[in-house]
Image (cartoon, rainbow, N blue to C red; front, side, top):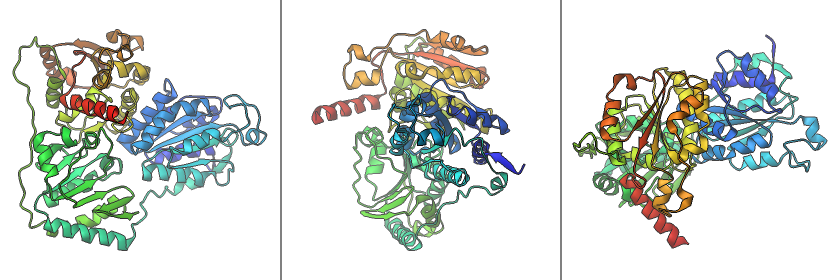
Length: 564
């Protein structure tokens, strides 16, 4: 095979970086491109219900496997995906957005084609996407096309941000040299400036050697930019107490003897708050300091000795070192940090283990009880997806077994995200280990935005656990404002009918409303095996919520009132 089509070249390259499922929808400007997916053994076309869901699914897939691809059509398709793409940009998730666009000649002639604004401007949608993309490319010349495709994949993978790639319909069937595939895309990192890196390392080592009460705090980009191993080694070598933020949950093994809990500013458990805020050195790995991630910006460090390691810069106290990437600087730091930390005397870390009081089996379920209990049911390697709302806050008080991967869109916070993300995560988990469980917690209100993607789960025989928290509407919104307002109501659904409605044959649909029913379910060994898709409707009081969410809602309401 001396030559292959450009479309096949794209998908062969994606397979080389372990992208095996392609998300999106067909449209007349991408149909010929989609044909090429079936020419590459080991690839599959997910076939989503709509482009927004596809973008959410691509996001969830990329969080588990490191990168993903969504294919949409020009105009109507790509714009429908942009909310999901914006979330991936905000939260550092590598999604390649491939758009089938009209032919080069049609664009040159400014033809009045469908899916356009009718003004001859074929660049407007590309310009929209450029604001939420790390880089963009619209292929116009077959000669440069392979190099541009390689560049887009490299940037998506290395920068962990969305990239826009426009492929004209007339180019995808043109031929390029197949031998180009023999040279893998160089995904290695550009080395840090040696002098700047050395200055950071030496300064941090000096701070470590003087610290009496240091802490390590891991946030979202610890996972997104693949420094979990380096962070674990930093904890092992220093024995410093280690904490995570809500967005960083899962980035440190919670069974590690030096793990102390989740830090959320004023919303933290008192002993966690005290341990972090009284530190004389904070080593912060991959911070994303959004309001819901910091308890409405209520971080209150007593020290100025703060080192922030980021994907593309490092900050030491008030000095910023642009371009000093955390993965490389941490690796150099690890080679020397043991000696610097040799004088540190380890202090006890908060254990924060919560247990439920003994209650009658007929006791109605409440959020606090559920999130305390779910820790006992989770298993090593689980992928746990929580929706913006009660579950995203409740999961913070649950204890994750080692190697549990948490997904929650805390910064972008688009309701309904979790259902699409669950689909993508389920595809990714199946590709890595067919026994790996994927567990979704979503509210009844959020479910209504993206429920169609359960159909895609059924279509592909995926087997996630879908816990639907039925509290009769938008509880998080009720807590912030409008407890009895009609706009926080939703039409009640017959949730137990959803799986058969979407064509499921082998499934479980279960409703539980008491602690006894929940315990019986989670103690059933057959239920604990991901042998079929399951929907579990959990009946809860309307205004019931985790205590941290109640406090966060009060802070948000007060902030909104003050700024209003």
